[in-house]
Length: 76
Image (cartoon, rainbow, N blue to C red; front, side):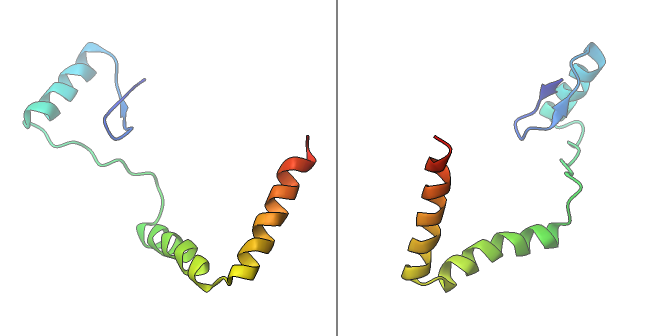
């Protein structure tokens, strides 16, 4: 199935192409790309990573980085 500019699923048949054309010309509104997730929860999740990064000390960041590097290189 074809994809739109924002990754939306688009039909590949003639009728579907006509629908896409009506959207492009402004005759019809595009349907929102609903991924089924709660927007409030997404917003909190995005802020959580930033808040955690601000709260970590330099020493703790180094510990996390060393542990991750050891895990990455142990498989080789």
